[in-house]
Length: 507
Image (tube, rainbow, N blue to C red; front, side):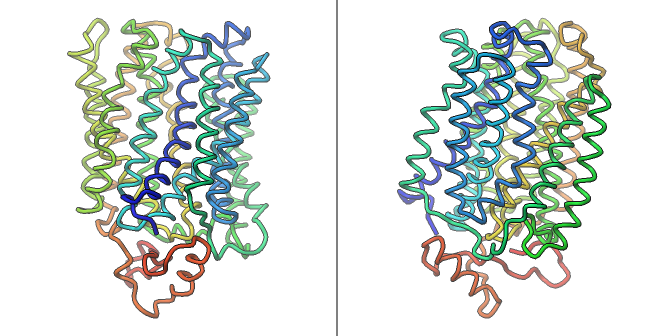
């Protein structure tokens, strides 16, 4: 296993961060480009919605499959394929002659994102020593969050200086760099026990479940195509039930359901859903509110969140290491409470108030809460699963986060009383934004309560020293080391029994 302080360890971390940052950056810069895309390609409002939703549908629908493919066929291999796929799709987006072509290319981008995103986290989980993983995940979260946060600012600049097409071309040189560096510096790893045929029925059902649910959430609140939205929701629900049945019966499931026998894994993902739903609501509405109700330009609205970027960059890695020292329960309780406090401060922002007096304190507190939460929650979710299921665990956690954000974007405007016309009315949007922030603050506070009640402090403790001779993991260790090319003495056990009656985690 690699040390974070080693040269190769730093290369592995840099490659995974840059690869996932390409997807995170692309997901946010497009929002700023939509008006220019609409004018250049003569696109309708519905067409512009699908420029966003086409990407989200395939990303959410295939991200679990991406994690499973990495565990089976090699995490570096699937990650690199995802980066290449995403890069080619980005070039197609930049060359799009019509909005229909652009939507199709965005669908392809989502497939690439579904392959590379869980792969980046799974590589970190498989490559680094257990004592270094929380810090590595913290750095991944911090710099990935920075990429997402600066997206509107970068997008605004590129649109003004070049064209909306430059937003997509940005991914091309970054993708080439990631693929070359991954081939040179990232060790291959996979689940040595993933044998037999690929679980195609499970893959299809999981994709239908996530894509159907996502389509229903995206379309139903708009009032357009209500019947197809309900039909898609019904198909998604039926596929989810069938997926559980198939995974219970198949010999080699894509998603081993025993992963959810870990109460820590389940609790961490429930907390992930709650926290990311709150975050999705803020990121969706804040930029609109700043532009429509406070009169900010797109670049100024993107720059307004720079304190969040600074907090993630400076503190997220430290938060991961701190959670490992003291246990994740306190950080995952305090972090969501700070997020809730930031949202309460946002709910008090009134049109006409200055940035320094009203907006800055809110985004600072919000950023501190985000930095305290993201790395520990991701590290907890991954640490609660067996090492051999790192790709699946990462895929589940990413799918939960994406679904939560989609749910917030779909449901929050209705809960806040916002209609389509309100997004052009400064006063109506201000009222709705304040209500929405109160709702998301309550959701974040509920996440803090769940963390306090369910998260154990020992979930991030290094496990290597605790492996007992004859505990049944020696064969798995040897197999994993043979695949990954790492010395046995540094390998973390693939599983260790939970205390009798605890029922908490398998590692």
